[in-house]
Figure 1: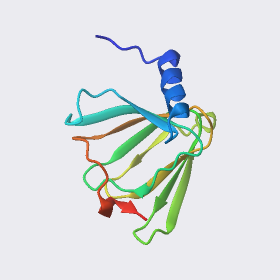
Figure 2: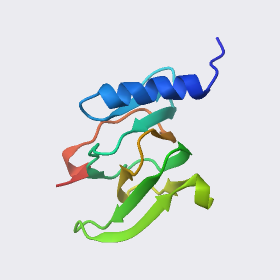
Figure 3: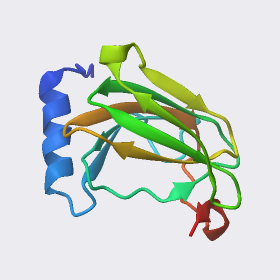
Length: 132
């Protein structure tokens, strides 16, 4: 079955994010958590908290579909090393985070939506992959 990736779908995911206590919502396009490619939309609302984390075994690619988002990079000492602002109005559409890179994302506008791709299978964060 074909799935149209349109404004109606993105608006639905955004509304779910706004109603979620976490202020974010994933919409998976992969068939299972074991899939070799994890492809998903991630709706992020201002105020959501994503821990500083890393993916040791896979790189991660973000394409900003709408909204505005800050990406912060850190070293293992929890020191901020770089910041990028993704904003299509400024021609900054996405980025590629290498495997093992500590990072977090911060939505700067309501309705922020990213398309994410990383290698599967899905692996939940392990304690050693979150900076506290």
